[in-house]
Length: 148
Image 1 (cartoon, rainbow, N blue to C red):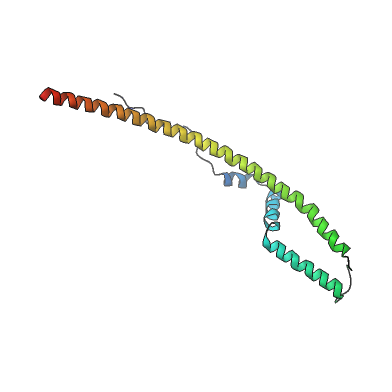
Image 2: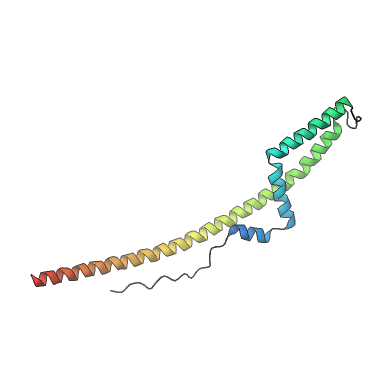
């Protein structure tokens, strides 16, 4: 009865996807992620709402002067420009997130392959132990039968 050779890890170590992504990010990609993170927050909505309310109040009451009288064409232009630039930046960030998801899925696949290989080695070793125990049990039974 022989046991299988001890399992040898012949695969690359598991890599941290966060470190891989961080090492590959450019300044533009980090900026796109920052914009998407902040534009999609309640703080942004609250601050933008306050700024727009101040804009409307100052133009309606003319405390300073009417730089954008009702119907607030300049404000609409500013908001349109903001939307025109924000949407593609958010899409860039979403595309990067999709690429990150693909990398994480591939990393999960590699880990699953490694796990399957190691579980197979453990099962082979356990099967060899079962065979050895069965042989020992048979020898002990033969010895007991021989002494009786």
